[in-house]
Amino acid sequence: MKRNILLFFIVISASFVAIKPVLAEAQQVPTLVLINNVNIFDGKTETLQKGMHVLVEGNLIKQISKEPLMVMQTDNVTIINGEGRTLMPGLTDCHWHSMGAYMTGNPFAAGLGKLNLVAAHGSEKTLMRGFTTVRDVGGPVFDVKAAIDEGLFVGPRIYAAGSMISQTSGHADFRSPIEVPQSYSRDLTPQERMGTVAIADGRAQVMQRVRENLMHGAAFIKLMGGGGVASPSDPLDVSQYTIDEIAAAVEVAENWGTYVTVHSYTAKAIQNAIRGGVRNVEHGQMIDKETAKLMQEKGTSVCMQPFYNDEDAIPLPPGSFAEKKYQQLLSGTDNAFKLAKKYDLLIGFGTDSQGSPALAERQGAQLAKLTRYFEPWQVLKIATSQNYEILKRSGPRDPYPGENGVVKEGAYADLLLVDGNPLEDINLIADPHKNFVVIMKDGVIYKNTIQ
Image 1 (tube, one colour):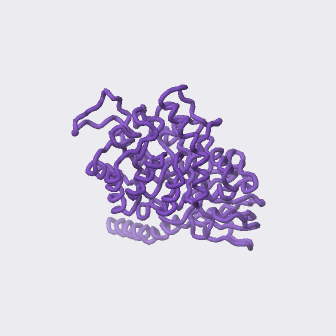
Image 2 (tube, rainbow, N blue to C red):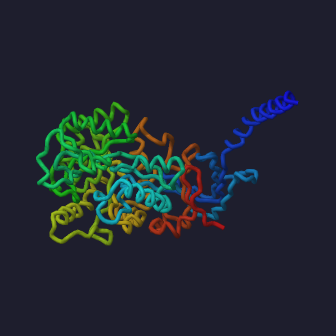
Image 3 (cartoon, rainbow, N blue to C red):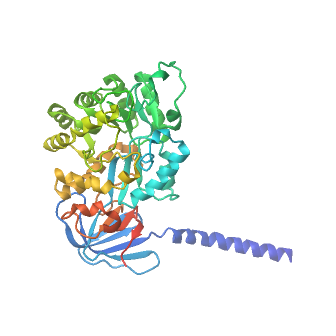
């Protein structure tokens, strides 16, 4: 009797071993999404490809065809009738702050727990506006990024820089004057302990902070290279970090196969950064012709923001130090965009929204403002394939290796289906909740309002 029971369990165990590979194989069958009858903006060209059919397999665009595509209707197949709507790549923001965009008030005064919760909350809203990728240029966003990538939270792809590296008295130094001077072996500030900022002076300290960001998984490095509005000590016109200090950061980043970007508004600060080997500039509102020519010569890209004295202007106390600096940079926006266009610089689009959920919600509306300088198709190109040219400078540190920002066979399936033609009416992107009827990231449909 005991022998028969033993043989029974051996047979049952062998059966499970035999069928386990079959079950595993069945679970790996990729999902299919067939999107029929759409007009495609591919992220690069001004002419729509009309009457097209697109097959998504797993997380990639498998096939694009003028002829109808056939798939068997099974549980893993979703068929969407586009009915002549516009299919385009997901939008991107090359200057985003996940931890601060949906924070009401000063994000530098919040603890890490609240920052993570607000970032997770805001990330879902960001994706549901059609922004499938953001380039996070400062903050301890690595855990939120990992949770999104693992499917625990909904949100965009995140290219993260980690802590913003600043010199003493620089744009990320929020200490008050009575807190300095401090010992060279000083304690870290609360913001440094959380990984929001890193204050470093001299080659050795700069190199250490860069390496720490890379250890956390940074896709690129951000230095504060000039004055800023929010910081309490630095005028807007100052140049920060010496060329040698900048070069130290660049050397470490390049050893890891990635690049350094620098927060800079003024011509001098940008020129110093370029001479130090920096490959991208954030903002650039106060560039001049000489600087634009140097950027063109060196292939330096610039992530720009449509900052104007309009409905999206940040309210600051009249006459305050911050308000005066803000007005100074606003006065340069128009000229900066015109110079960047004239010298054919690689321009990226970013919003730099912080401390205002209402402003964060206007991400698409801010993008639409670029029609002051570009045709609608060029605006969309900037926020899709062109932004990705900057993102892909991360090289082997790219957290999402593969082609994106385009509608192309073999590219990631980060896609939007727009109810209308944004190449004719760019303001469609300003109301994504109404006009983006399908939102897909990595082959997963997060919104589908087509019956």
